[in-house]
Image 1 (cartoon, one colour):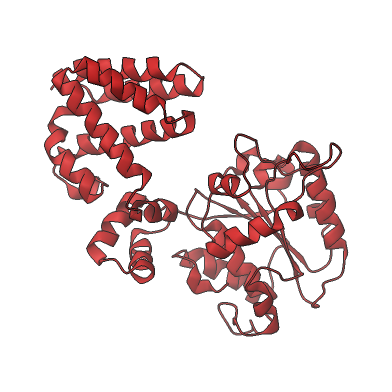
Image 2 (cartoon, rainbow, N blue to C red; image 1 turned 135 degrees about the vertical axis):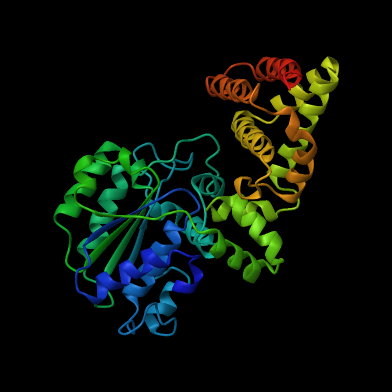
Length: 379
């Protein structure tokens, strides 16, 4: 994987390259940042660069040498991946799941795109409602692999995705590995929640914060990769707020946010009409989504409520909406103002808390719908 496949993040990339050129590359790096900012993309491109035999004088992997050819399908023997896994019914009772158990699924995912999240990974491995973790078995396997000499005579690179999901036994064993690293080994951790890691691990890695992707880089990537117009791409880029996954998700014609927009519109129109019977049907429909999707709808609800309120100030740079959302908001925004914005937000946040605590969804959303009738009157 080459540098040009990473969207934006010039500052982080230049910092990594300078570390190598100046001979001060630490044996353990932790890339930290929000979802969709490209941490894994940077890790993969940097690993390819470290393993490339022609990297001298270059800012990225050459893509042509035998080492680069081996990383094209992520089968390089000196590139080792660790990531959260689950225990499947086919595994024995004594078996501790390790990354190698899901190597095919992992290579399929990162080959499709270096931009993905834990939810997509869980779907890839059919995790359903299980909790994915990095087990002590993984640390034992990693220790075994790193104890072997480099097959190609260069670096051995260990990429650990979401190290915050290591259990305590695994964390302690990884700590020992980092404290006494095998020769020519580079650890690259990719974390979204580094505060969950042991303090002793955090103190022994060099943390590099990866910021959200700038809107211009997302716009350019959307134009070049999907062939859409610059104006539409910029609107999506601003809406994505630095998250490439959000930007790509908005391109889907049947994307979830379009469904949520229809639900939001229906709620507000029925509440304005005081149509209690249809609001009951609306709450039943939302209840059919399941808890995780219900929470995503409430997150969407909070965002569009905020955008509706900000739209009243007539300053486009303050709002982040798709064309469809703005078309609705242009007529609806006057109903969201200083008299009810805080109460509407409190209402949605209370519903979010109740759903997270396994409250009855029909009751939660019907109550929310009825209260919206009163709140929309306060204009």
